[in-house]
Image 1 (cartoon, rainbow, N blue to C red):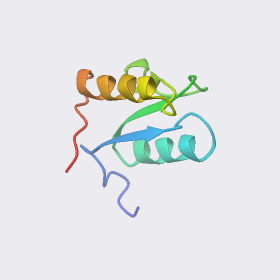
Image 2 (spheres, one colour):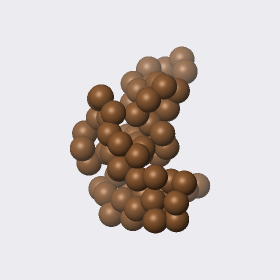
Image 3 (cartoon, one colour):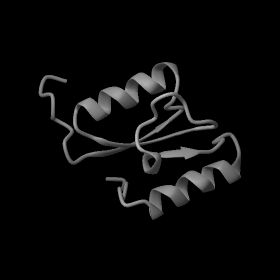
Image 4 (tube, rainbow, N blue to C red):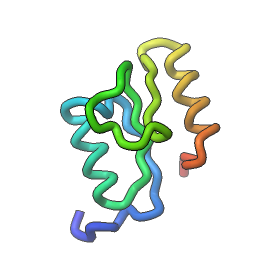
Length: 81
């Protein structure tokens, strides 16, 4: 990404966003200006603001429902294009 704020105003959901590649992707998107909601089974070290993290196991229908509910109910208003 050439412009450090090229994603300003954009929103993203990163699953597995607390460790490894997911953590790196989350950090890079935030550095580029995006608001990022991350999800994982457990909260990692620096997962960002509490309102931008959802503890859920997306390998289950219940976990997917938890994430979907969080996307709809949180003020970040993620939306598909």
